[in-house]
Length: 302
Image (tube, rainbow, N blue to C red; front, side, top):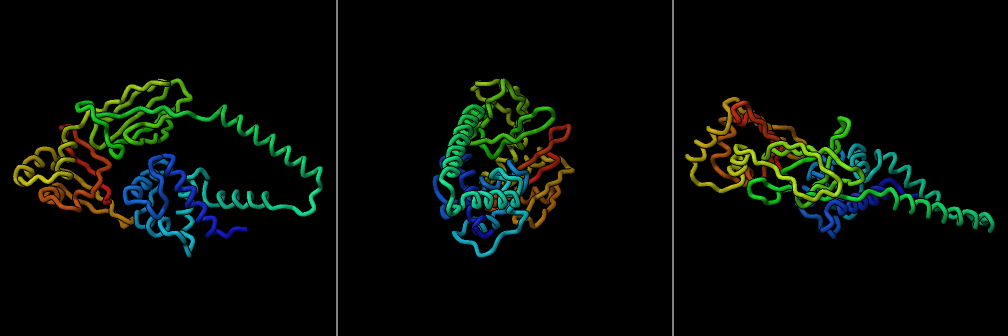
């Protein structure tokens, strides 16, 4: 019977296989898992499980080829849920059950053996028929900028399918929505800190791209944070124009260390002088007031 640490190693491989389903161009292993792959995995967990893990945790527990200690159970629950289980307890139970059922029994009666083999063949055939008949196909739709017609970065937009007031996250890979196409139509809600929200009904087999309209002030803020503008005075004047006086900025720190708060003056001072730390900040939410000025920003420190 495999020990929990061995099951954890097996779970790590299942997490890798799940990651490869969403990012099929990745063909490596945990040793070659890059910093960008780690960010993609963190986002995949946030979308699929509604939980968060830190970059440091992934480096500590998933990147190593061997693990001496088992991670905390709450983290094992998150990984188990990512690969399709309710949690770590179910993962351990089902895998141990598989091992027990696979254990050979000595001196098995020949007729019984043939009976079980025949039953297994019939059951396997039934499973194949079921999977073929009821497996979901995927409908792919690209998301583009309404003005430039360029694909929108997958990291900058979130999408959900809304049905009976229930929201189900939609995977976005290479700027394309990955939609299950077993239904005739689906109501999709797209949100982005840099683009205006959009609700659209997508019909089965539709392939026309979805276009999102850029939100001007958030786009200017993005330019300030990512570019190397040298004219500080111009930058300062433009910030005064797009940021509300009652601006609140929340920066979520790495490794679950909490958050920092900035008002308009404090945040503007950070934006005026470009820095490496500034470019590593990821904006996840921007809210504007009635005058379209930005009055709330939520940022993740990467």
